Length: 449
Ligand SMILES: [Mg+2]
View 1 (cartoon, protein in one colour):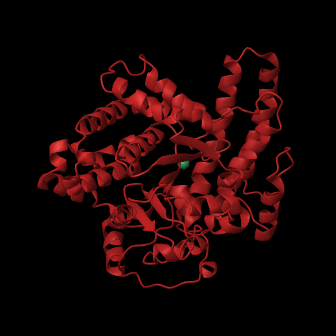
View 2: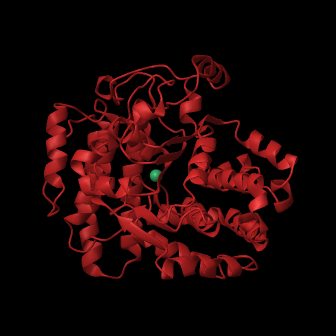
């Protein structure tokens, strides 16, 4: 059992000045590039746009964006955000003041990175003609187009499995049901095209025999902390509960959103959930995070014959997805808290209504690396720290059932069962690669009791 015991507030959060950290690497190499990408995107859109006023204003926007880039490159101090008419600005500046003097290359990583996206948004909010513009849409589009083959493959896989309803309805198929749950959870976990190779990709037959179990075991090799059995146990124990609303706090648009919608549909088809609420961001965030328009856009693309000429399975799947959205069984929602710099340890005090909502949820699923960083306060916990502990106020006795599905892409990772396992991982993927390179993952669950 993991043994380390810590008070959450005593654990340092990672700073962009920490030697050898992913934080430092990100601040040094990725941030300026991301801003440069936004400058180019605005330029390209302005060149294509016929509206004179919009085009004229694009120059000032590009200058303001370049100014952020220069500030990052010259490691300037983080300065208070100027008013853009939105209510969240004072909170940002209060938080910045609480941190004290800091600069791009010497600040808490979580705050600095969130702050960068809010700085970009401030420029757009303050404009006349670019207020609702998604500066990352072009990038999101191109990534989705590249994963078309994977979308078709998953659609066919899903339809073929659910064509045989035996697996979801026959009580005697408990083991097959569990394997299907594991597989669908893993699809949502490794929700990007490049990682699909890690999946077992089982047929209906596989799910019902030993081979299926072996393939699943192999696919789970890179999950360094895996509470799937506990989640399944919880779901089985509580299956009789009348209201089983599941919340999914989304990460990325495009292919990952497709896998998340498919996961939601699976949870409903399998009778695990009675409804699903998808949480999006209010404004463009961490490049590829889902904003409300990305959901509409996903359906537009799935419907497009140009994008998906081979429609055999998609034409069976899409009406199924749409039906859940149209009947309100799947809903989407945004909360301003998701685009603040606060970790989720601050949720009970900063967003009490949201916290209450999640307490009432049957299961709150948090997707991706940023959500995990926020769940664990981006803290440099020993890797054997129990997940429950790293969740702080969202852990023990919080009343929130939290499942994190996260591929490891930053400095934090908890819940590894023993130090010898950590040592083994350090040998296998040295230099912290297993916490950073996206090839390892965690499936972490806590019941909040
Ligand atoms: Mg993201």
